[in-house]
Image (cartoon, rainbow, N blue to C red; front, top):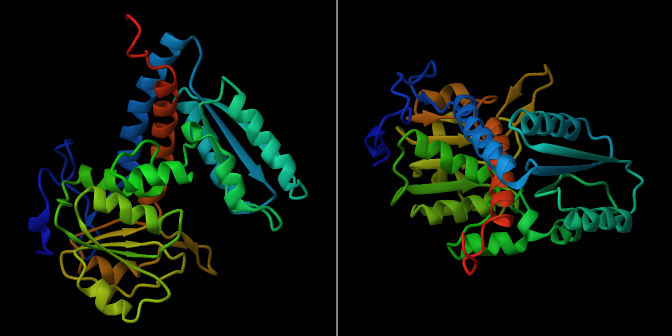
Length: 314
C-alpha cells in the first residue's frame, strides 16, 4: 500500500507513451495533455449535437467586477469553448451591479433556449450573496456543479453535473491507472467548491476518505498516512514535501503566485516529487482539467436537454 503497485493499467492511460517524471522520480500527472484529449472528444460530441439540434451547445459565462484572476479564467474558458464548437455568451457586469440585477440575468439565462450551461465566475463582489446566486442557476444548466441539487445527487451516488475540479482529479487518476478503490485518501481543504465535493467524488470511487480543515488537530499525521493527497487550501507550499508518504499520489489544486511572479501549488513540489509516486505539476496539472470538465459538463447538459423521450418512438 502507498507505493506504485497501487496503479493498474498503463501509467499514461491508453497512450502507450513513457510517463514524464519529475526530477525526484515521481510520475508527472500531465493534466495539459489529458485535457487536450478530453477537449477533442468534447468537440466531436459538440459537432454531433449541432447536426442533430440545428445549433451548437451554448455556454453563458457571467463575470462581475474587475478581479484580474477572474478575467484570465473567463477568457480561457471562453476560448476553450469556442475551440470545442460550443457557442459562448459572455456577460461582463460592473462591480456596482446589484444582487437583484444579477439574479434577473440568471433568470433570463435559465429561460434562454440557446444556453445549455451557465457559469458564474467566483468570487462575486461584497454585497452579493454567492449562495443565492449559485442557487438561482437552473440545476440542469449548472455546469460548475455547485448547485445543492447536483451536490446532493453526487452525495447519493447519482452524479449528474459534477464539480469540475474534483471531476478533473478523478479523470486524471483514472487516466494514469491509479487504483482508487480502497485507497486511503486525504483531502486538505473543505470548501464547497473543491474540498467537500472532492471527498464525495473519492467516496464514489470507493476510496477511504479523510477531510482535513482548520479544526484538524494533527494535519501532518493525516497527510503522512495518506496514499492519495488532494491539496486545496490556496496557500503556497502549505504542505511540506517531507509529509508525503513514499509512493503516494499527490493532486495539487492550488494555484498561487509568488512575489517573483512564479505560479506554485499548495504542496512544496521538489521535495514532494522525491517521495511521491505520482504528482501534478503547477501549472499544467489540475487547471487544464478543470476547463476540460467544464466543457464536458456543457455538452452533457445540452445532450440531456435534447435526449429523445423514452415514451416517444425514435
